[in-house]
Length: 447
Image (cartoon, rainbow, N blue to C red; front, side, top):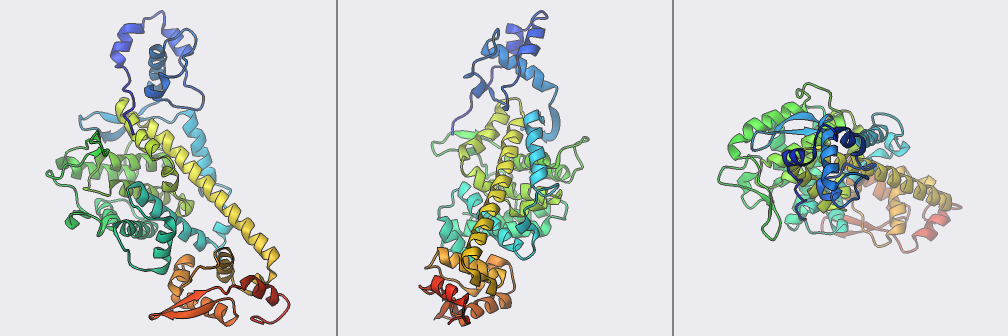
């Protein structure tokens, strides 16, 4: 990631270009590029409107933006406020988020259906746990991570521990969604995120100390962000909680925008030795759930961020290099949230189509409950997969006895075979599973 080009100082542009006669030209011609909110680093490479230079175009755009920006209760290290706007492209994304994330219409039937919703909940928790950890350097495959969570085996290394911590944190966030945010809750979330992953174990769940200066940089040593001093952190955290709980500012902030700004706030203050990014994303989940976006239990934003991590980092830098304008981060994150919602709807559509196709092809699935049918579908796709009672329980969020009954019933009907591995029972599909299912359509189970 590279620093974005720093915009030319506005006071210099005023002196260089602006006079009363040209003011109407600036306001008439200097419009934003359609569907974008460009930083100077992007705008300077675009062709300006006829009659304007790139610098004049930028000055006109800044003049237009000035009237839209509202002040945040978040201050930078020099005491200057951050500000944000909600331009048309953000308003469009907010409408799409409202329509697709549980506050309006269009909720997929499998999410509403209590028989199937838990499967999608567990899938999203696992996906977010994995990708949020990978954004922070966790190195393991998705398949290995899923196997660890579903089987309940202990983590083998720090990367797996990070993922398991994130999974447990996301579960905890769902439990905490009705509670107001407090410093104690933030510390608890950080402790969950970082348990057994820090070089200094006592740093979990506490502020960084003055002697623990932490900066955001790259492997070459370039520093992108030097956060506020440790002495300011208690007051800044109190102010952040007031903002998260809607006590500030004194004007309406769209709930999704509030969650996004909370995400930025914790990342900017960087109050912990490590785990700030994961904690910031967890807090944005809490904020969305707390404000009524219940579908967010099923959405993974980190899976979108991981596809373009440099853009994620750049959205922070653009804010700090252009007069603390948080609109860049708001634009980027509303797009991420909308894409995550779209991917959830697309995923549910694909899975629904798969189930319908399988049910049409293998009528024997009607002989099983929905959890067993899902396991059979998975076994047909992955014939060498192993299943355990603990894994089946986690996959469907059911009691241990329910999961045990499901698997033993499948074994009794010849759909699964079992063997002992230590004290644990391991179930595997037979090689002729498809044929056995077809025979069930016309004869006794297991015939």
